[in-house]
Length: 91
Ligand code: HEC
Image (cartoon, rainbow, N blue to C red):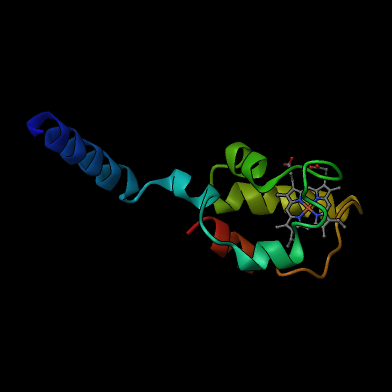
């Protein structure tokens, strides 16, 4: 009985610590703008997934540089809210 309680407390503590201000959270967080504007291409088939992009580009600047590159190469539409999606993904 006591052992179980202790285990519960440990699990809870780890959960709280893990949930605090972690960057990796971005992958599990709701990203409605991304879902609406980007996910239909970035499905791991036509283009890389959100998780791959987040793993590759560590901050907003890197992310937006990559966006610029692909937009000017004509591989992505120019008229999407990239800045807003960057804010959403790299909060
Ligand atoms: C018409 C399809 C399409 C849409 C819509 C689209 N993308 Fe892309 N995107 C691509 C393709 C194709 C590539 C290049 C191939 C790849 O990286 O898989 C790419 C590449 C990227 C890259 C660079 C990936 C890398 O490997 O460095 C980023 C970042 C990116 N897109 C972000 C976005 C964001 C943010 C949105 C939504 C606002 C979006 N894309 C919408 C097709 C699309």
